[in-house]
Length: 344
Image (cartoon, rainbow, N blue to C red; front, side, top):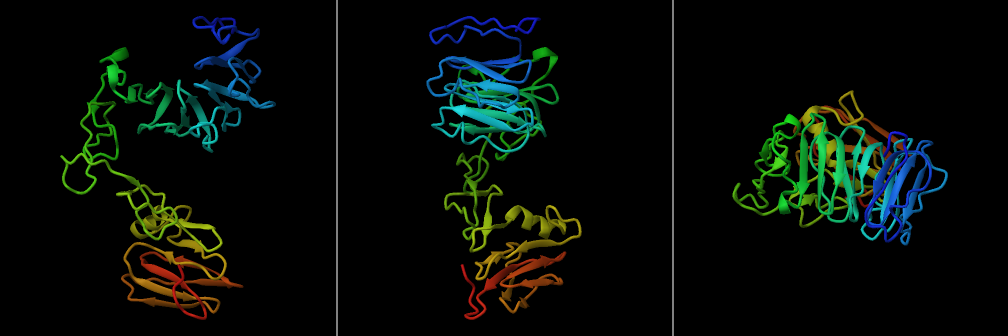
């Protein structure tokens, strides 16, 4: 990009990807056989191959940033949301996440990484991972990526072949700390900026030298998205009512037990709706105690409580709300009012 905001491109031109249209631009990104750029009036224009729709951005949208990939493109709109277009074989288009993005990179294959407004990187598409930490800039390659952290250090991840994930020492006067950059490993070092291959995983509790990889997922067998192969709970466990409404996840319930309050509550209580009657089992997986609520009469029985706690209920037709007060924990089953048996 020149000082007058015009562009010059060179290299392989088999798809006319170096033939720049007239105009002034503020940002540009080159893909496999197409190029996209943001104009000074916040529109995106693309040129080169458009066989998969990668050179056809959505009409009528305003953008701050654009990234060209292999056969797809992604952009950050002026409201901070992310939208993608083109080839979608690996979910690189349809998998664009919600939330505010500040910068992204589509790499040169079927994956994308973006920086959220809190500095955290998350990625989607084919065979993709995301590093830990907070970043100001990210750049994706075919099977590796690099980012500039908020402290100015460069962190690279992915396939270490040819040394591409090992930045030069003392780059720009910055010293790099080699170690384990994977937060799920036993010897994770949050200060490490370059992975040195020392990350070790304990997938079956056999010790630090066991190289079984941890399988993240939902380890609660009664949760909606339970995985029988998961060895580590990643916070995705969801418990739903019979009508499909999502209730509480394990992260919130653990917070209620350990900290006396849950996300969104500051008075030390946790509230969740049980949905329409009849409801399935609704669980607080903390101390394995049992309480029973019978609908529609809302008859509460708290059996063998480990901690003292008070309960309040609200009966509206065939629905109810329970509030877990500080120190109360256990299993709370929603039962059929007639059969009085826990429903699943």
